[in-house]
Length: 274
Image (cartoon, rainbow, N blue to C red; front, side, top):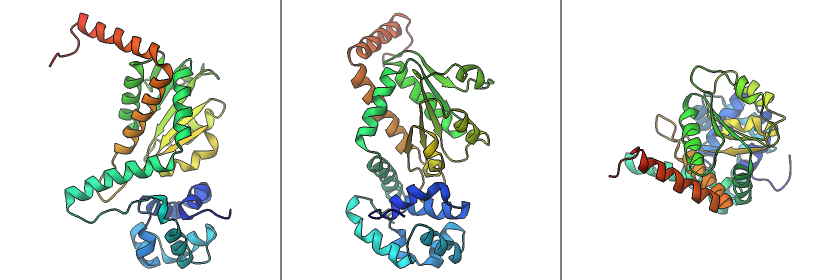
């Protein structure tokens, strides 16, 4: 294990090597960074539906001698800016969770990486945005935003269609954006492996860290919390940032395209004036 890495960094570096049960513990700690400070191994095992033995092995696999050593390590990294989820009333807890997910997501992605991806979005000959199941609406929104400022942005899969016909011609001048949040389709792993020779950005929840070595960029978004359903405020915020970074790179051409689209809307009475 590398020295001078904290608990959360060790989880990221080791995620692909963890067992399925260990990944449950890893994901829980990433979503609730300070839970390890107040929870015993038995409580952490109950919260993740694992066992005390699995929790113990998890910390040792990360390079710690004990749960207590991991606690001390996390205390020393409090100044990294990871917020603690509130236990306030239902509405306030939900709001805090949304803000926590966005803040934690953006804190963990280097700003220069966002700028670099924005530049690639601006420069690519074509962009293929791929999303399945609950990832599809985000892929659709991403494509819609980019189409305001540039051409040749393709949303996949098309209804009733497979991917091969569209992606077989993808080359080095293109960019493929995969959006893959948990409960991905069974063939998602194979898709990532198939695209290993293309330029790929993957936007995913922490379980997507298993693909880190197989894509050019992995953007990890936090979507969990205490509510029954996952929240997608963080990935939607990230998509907005990426589109704005691309807009800044395209600049005048993007503004002219947006103006042309608005003129089309007006001429064809496509958009309400209200």
